[in-house]
Length: 219
Ligand SMILES: NC(=O)c1ccc[n+]([C@@H]2O[C@H](COP(=O)([O-])OP(=O)(O)OC[C@H]3O[C@@H](n4cnc5c(N)ncnc54)[C@H](OP(=O)(O)O)[C@@H]3O)[C@@H](O)[C@H]2O)c1
Figure 1: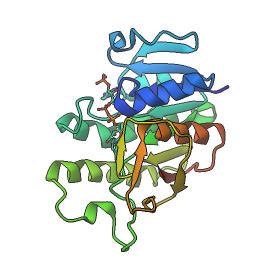
Figure 2: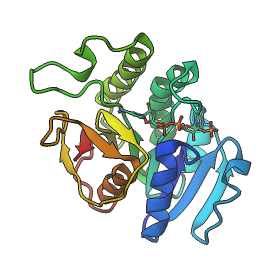
Figure 3: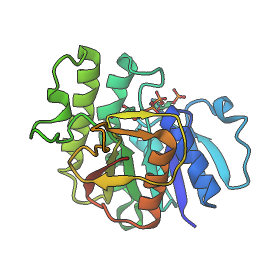
Figure 4: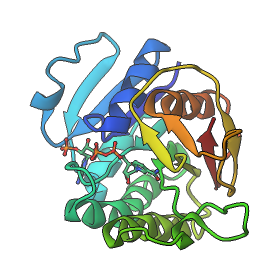
């Protein structure tokens, strides 16, 4: 069983990662700003500690003694300004905090964005016409975070981009992956439930296949 520290455990995606990890018998330390938000999540394999993903010292403390550090952080209030202030800086704080542990450092897995994925026409998702400016900004914040991760060679990082549409739904346990290409279903739609996204992320923890790269998941 893995020892997993998780930032973002109170969020839409993070909650599903937490549930999937506990259901598989892993030990999870949820690192949250407000533990009261997880008061209803009692489990013998769950510890809740206080921390802030933007503080490298907090990240180092959270990462110490863990096998994997997962970050599912966003703005905490949907796609607002807090999102922009969190997504890209968190990548630097996470790498900086993990890096100080040297050979003892856990793997780092970050929830990424779909914007930079390639589409069948050779463009990227964020090139589509008509995307609202706030959405574009968040897509590019994730793109900047990924560009930064790709410069990092001394931390075992992985970024997992959701499909273009990710929302709470059914856990089917069935999904397809790609590295930099948007995964499309037979109807040409790119989607994944947050539950199946969590399945893919836990599968990657248990059977690492994408250390040092981004991959994506869809139906
Ligand atoms: N198709 C796509 O590409 C796609 C779609 C959806 C989401 N995403 C990405 O997936 C990620 C998660 O999305 P979500 O919808 O699950 O987000 P969410 O529901 O807004 O949750 C964000 C989480 O981040 C935590 N957080 C924010 N700032 C923090 C900080 N400084 N320190 C510690 N924790 C912090 C929040 O904690 P609090 O409870 O303390 O606020 C919350 O648990 C985001 O980066 C988002 O952009 C991508």
